[in-house]
Length: 242
Image (cartoon, rainbow, N blue to C red; front, side, top):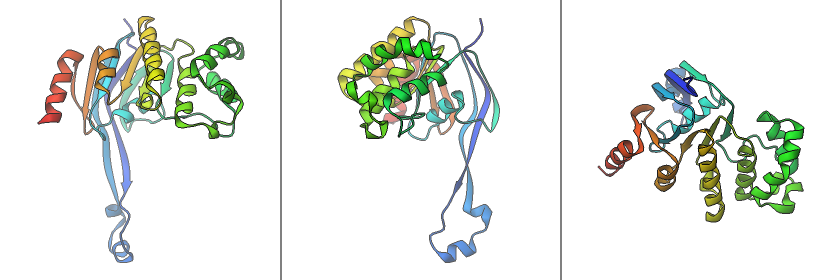
């Protein structure tokens, strides 16, 4: 069976700058001391089957968001390889891909086309997208006038308007009211039943436990554990409480 995602020895390095605190520090520090390397991911190896629902867990700075951004091709690895088979729909950053001065309607068509939908397909789905988003007449207002919750609702509604092969979600459901979050989770479960591969980053244990059958635990860029939710979550919680 062809894998949805195959990650081999994947690493990602960032170069960070240490801003000198004074002119004296600036004069004394050499360039190699001003800049330092930070490895966000170290030799990650993961294979994901079609239809799996995977939670990516870990404390802040563990590399979770970096991993999803590499899978979605927002970032590229420093070394290693990644193979992706299928269409990807991403919800990684609030309003990412939205043009602030475009109306909600215009952004629906823009983002729908980025997801590979034709104009006719977007036309056919538009009313259901609008209904799901619950933003009403604001659909014809510039999205720069939207609240963060409205941004999230519209972005989510577009992302799940088709049935992607792979859905990436990074903490976006932390924004918005509980009623809409419940509707979003129900939609994710529906996509799961239809065979979409799901990768979810969330600090909500209840959401992870409800959606995910498998967990990938990252710590400081390293893969600590990869297994069933029942195996990994207790070990992760024990580490947090130690």
